[in-house]
Image (cartoon, rainbow, N blue to C red):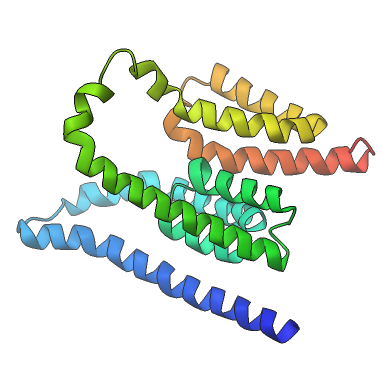
Length: 222
C-alpha cells in the first residue's frame, strides 16, 4: 500500500509542477504576444513602479495561501485549484463539502482523491456553464438585465457562503465566534476593505482562526 501511495503522490507533485509552470509560461506569453501583435510595449518605468507597488502584497498572499489551502485541499486539490483559479469562492467550498459528505480529511488518501475529483468536476462544470453563457448571453441579456432579477444576482455569493456557513458554524460554534467577530469588525470599521479584498482576507481569517483554535484547545475549551 505504501508503495502505491508514494507512486500516486509522486505523480501528483510531478504533474502539478508541470501544469503550474505551464500556466505561468502562458500567463507571461499573453502580454508578450499582445505587444508583438500590436507592435507596442509598456513604459518600463511605469511598469516597474506598478510591480513594486502591487507585487509584495501578492507575494505575501501567495505564500500564505500555500500554507492555508494545502491542509484543507490536499496536494492534488491545491495544484489543480491553483491552476484553474476561483479557489475561495468555488473550489474550496466544493472540495470541503465533498470531503465532509464523504467523512474524510484532506490529509488522508481518500481525502486527497475526493478533493482532487471534486475540484476537477467543479472546473469542468464551470467551463461548460461559461461556454453556454457565452453562447446564450446575447439572447438572454434582456432577461438577465431585468430589474426583477437584478437583486437575485447580487445575492448569489452571499447565499452560497451563507448556506456553507450555517453548516460549519453549527458544527464548530465555539470556534466560529472569533473569526466572525474579526471579519465583521474589519469590514465595518475599515472602509478600504470591500468585495475585491475577499481573496486576501480569507487567508488572514484562516490564520487567525488557527491561532484562536490553538489557544482555546490549550485552555480546554475545545
